[in-house]
Image (cartoon, rainbow over all chains, first blue to last red; front, side, top):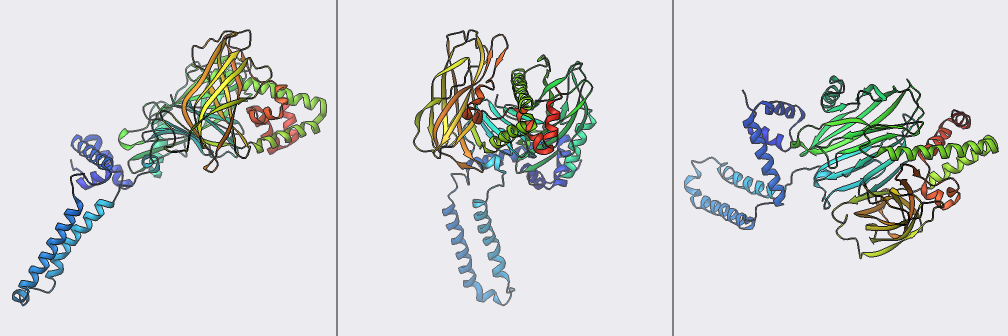
Length: 188
Length: 370
């Protein structure tokens, strides 16, 4: 059995894999316990990271950045000290080659600190405490913890909606069937 | 995406309504049968860690009973997927003869974490109401009561318009329909968000206790005695209304309509507060309390918050212990304010839409059918 690369599994876990890759990985996961476990681990890590709202508390980013900058300066100074002796033998691109990986590390550090995984609105919006019932001209919905059930009424001119603690309702004349249609979603 | 949609549709159809992501199952002795199900526009999409399933189906059902069907309610179950897990789609104001077919559409959307696995949606029958008000079905959603109310309203309003037609002719009927359409056009609707277990917003301004005013409905078996809710801006919560049974029969269910008024003096019917629930037996002369712990946040379309300046309650529906139901009669609706806030019945809505689309002759023909 050929297993997907770990990067593919990570993309799949985050829902960021393309359609074809997603289908292929999903198919593989049905029969591969090990890969499924890896995907679950990735998802757990993503969830944990999201819950932390950034880097772990024990990481002192300013101190880390200062140390990295100091190391770069030290490297540059050392290069100048020995520059005369090795200049004739070494090619001219060695300085950029030395500095580039360090700059890359700094950039990646900054990017990781500021980057947030893309989420759809229903997941990322601040969920009010408990269960939420919504009624509006486009749909009626019950939502809780990123799970939602909605009934849509897209092809009606006039929609009357209502909501209570028990759920939401909508009434409209279906433009295709000509019948009055009354829909409800229930909160319990 | 198209591939996913195709797989989804195939999954639903290959099973013949028995397997796959969606299943339609009616009891063997069901008075309605499934003729066809078109799942053409159903699809699944993923974004981030969420999976969204959209089911857009057009069903064609046949009346396989020996009676005329007046309304049908289908039950949609997704209990392992969504909170609550239940939805229903009803079509009232039908007149389906034995052997005839009729369409019914279900458009729903499920959102769940991808890791939760595949969505399972089951569509079944919750109830069928016949012309003699007899009922068939498991009635898990108490659809019998709702469908009986719609049918009683339909009879009331058909009779009212037929009497106008007889007394004043087509011109009088046209005048009445135009007045109904005008009222429907004036009825502003609010977006509502209800939260259970907390307020809908963290900060909505100072909260105050506000009393309900009462709108008297002539002939109502219940009298509203008191009503309070806590309001803040466009949000109201902890509504509590006390009623007294003025009738000579025990009451098993009631609903109190809830109107809010904004600072511009506009009134909106926002839904209702149901009575205490199953097991109620409110004897004549006894009091009961309808209350709701949830918070409701109201906003004008499109998403403009409103400021609540007043609230009004009225008795909108009562069921007696013997199963009979009270609804406001046409004499009660002679009060323009009551007629405006109560809104049209499903039948009045259907008939006025028929007039709007097909004209007066079609409406007169429809009223003469039964």
